[in-house]
Image (cartoon, rainbow, N blue to C red; front, side, top):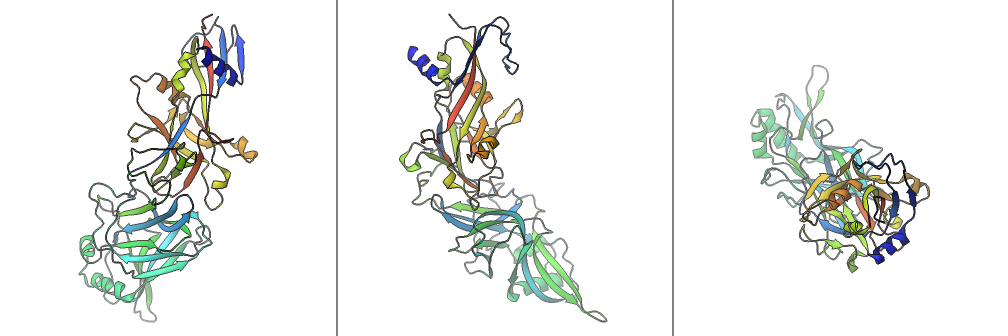
Length: 440
């Protein structure tokens, strides 16, 4: 006990004593009048960071098409492809209509990740099977068989902030039979279309190393468009007919497949969701890792927090802040990090639970803007309520919290965080602790 007290006192950055100190933020349901109160700031409790990987992530509930591929030294190759069934809102085409051309139009939705100054490519393949999930959803690991030979492709420099869309010409031998069968009434609904045309797979080039781009799913922005004309008395009437991503079924008909190659990387051992890679593992380089879309996520525990009971007297946590720093050399304009991250509870089997919350609402990991002014990026997480729950937990379980980006299932944002033993950049838990009714 004496050793513990000595350690605590050595780490105290602020101590105040008062016989009747007013502490308006002290919400402990106790009467402190006529009590001696000491307030300690303690930063010696251990923080343990680790990385694990979700077995799969639902990607069929998203409103974004993701296509592209990029590589980096840590995560190796990250690849996103999209699979979709198309349908028509109306199958009426004039008997006199004459087809001119067919094109796949993809409207940017503004999201991109990695280097858009490099050439990207999209390859359009025909699906061999229906877009029908085995259960209620598709996942980032899902796949639907498709013809190996693409029917169309486009190389382009992505401009998601400047241009509105890209245009991929579809060959006549693919578009014309569909058009003529819809025109004749042979295809008159989604089921009949599905029998002839299962859908499309949109893949990046195998050798691409550029960026991953987001496109809109909405039927007014992304579609397979048939350009045709009908003869008029003086001039032809130019018109269009669209097949759009099917949103009318009770089952999902669209998803993104997002994968990161782990072979030969530090994540190679993460073959099961219950496996954790400690930041203290030599392979992890005293860091933890997050990558949206592919399933990597950072897990955080406080293994020594119950040592707080060894401090003499009755006490309570007034405030607790976890500070975690991303190494500055591991993010830039091409590989940005977000100002805010979600914070959720997790159980011993790494099953995701509810979002963390306190008296002010949902809890987020937010970059401290004061630190940012001094060119230091630090995520801060208020964990006081969570720690109080952990202190009252009985029996003890191997629970933790996790942090990850918003839109985790339709982005590929990656974040690297310093672990608890990093020199000068270590993850740190700072607790403001009030002791009252102290034994003398």
